[in-house]
Length: 177
Ligand code: 5GP
Image (cartoon, rainbow, N blue to C red; front, side):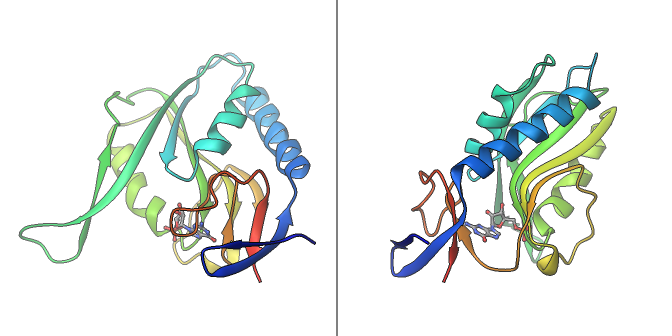
């Protein structure tokens, strides 16, 4: 079991590279079968999903579009609480078969707030593809169409996921010791 240090914390190998690659390929094959004859429109949420989205996309054989968006929270001038704003979603999703690509679903709060915005545009269908899901941590119910791995409620880094900016370049996924 390899141990690594990211900033001040120690992590151990949790999902090796081959296992991640194998699972990503399986998810892509399932999408290829499910979307045969259609043209899915992938909406990948930055920053964490860039590596997963890229590897998933390489295994697609159906025609597909992809765009990358960023969700940012800001304090509204009038309202209390955080408002979620979307950067980079300039296409109209009306009538499209949309697949959201996430790195990890933790509490589910991010997608819970984001989904109504997408639904507002009346896509033909909407699915979520997430590499990781922490079922124990999920507070907001979501239907996840494509899940890579269900993992325990422990902090992970690697394969696009960071700890305070570092660790995204790692090919494996590591878990906090
Ligand atoms: P949620 O809104 O589902 O609680 O959180 C989703 C976001 O929280 C993810 O897109 C990710 O940025 C961050 N996150 C949740 N759990 C982890 C984790 O274990 N490691 C890392 N690096 N980020 C996480």
